[in-house]
Each structure stands twice: as C-alpha cells, then as structure tokens.
Amino acid sequence: MVAFPPRDTVRFSLPATTHRCADGRTVLLEAVSPEGSGVLVRLHFRDSLVSGSYPMVAPGDTSTPGAVVVVRYLLRDASHGFFFDTGTVQVRREAGKVAGHIQGSGTETGIHIPTRIDYRNVPLPLATDTVPCGFEP
Image 1 (cartoon, rainbow, N blue to C red):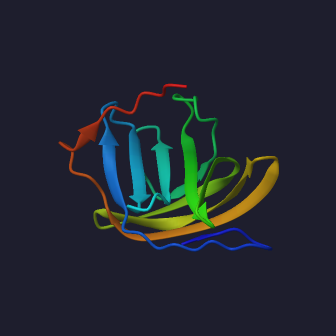
Image 2 (cartoon, rainbow, N blue to C red):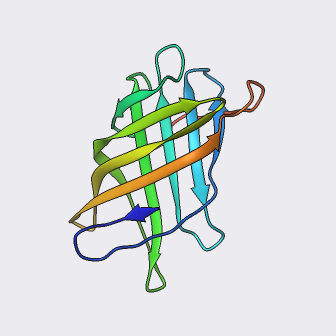
C-alpha cells in the first residue's frame, strides 16, 4: 500500500519480489504493476541484511548503509514519480522473508509528498539469484 496524506491518497497493492545484487551487500525489493505503478527499494547493508531501521540515502550513494526508495504511480491517467529524500525503511527478517514499513517523503514537481508503504511476507532471494545493481544517473 502507498498513501500520500493528508489530501490525495493513492493506494495500490502489488506482489513484491526481491533480488540479491552482485555485490553481496545489497537487496532490491520491487513491486510493479503492468499498468505502471510500482515501488523499488534498494537496501544496502554492512555484512548481512538484519532487522532494523535503514535511513534514506541519496540515489547515487553506493557505499553508505541505507535505503533508496522510488515510487511511480498513475493519477488520472498521468504518470508521476519521485524518490524519497527523507525517512526510514523498517525491516523485519522472519524465516527467509522480510516485512516492514517505509515512511518518508520526496518531492515531485515542487510538491512535498509524505508517503507510507507497508510490505509483508516478501521472500528473500536465493544466494544464486543475483542482478547487477550499478547506479547510472
């Protein structure tokens, strides 16, 4: 679920998947609809992904432990998107799955957008499920 309080609220519920990045210290969590709405979370950690709070980091920061969160949604047939510039990602690891809560905000077309995202029962990837996660501006 994604919510944009206090005025307009956009809600969507999507199945999420995870992928391990080739560096071994980053996991991607993604939920994307065929219509174009979605969330991408990049969690970068020290030695292993543990339960805890991960602060937002700048999208190009590939060394600081933390999270990059990007949201894309449709509102009245127009696509919108932003990345979080403040907030945290709460992670709970439970028997090969992750769950948690993301709270923060970003700016889209000059408008500050507070956002809440909840995720649960998302299976962690196998060690052999790796993808390149290099940042390209």
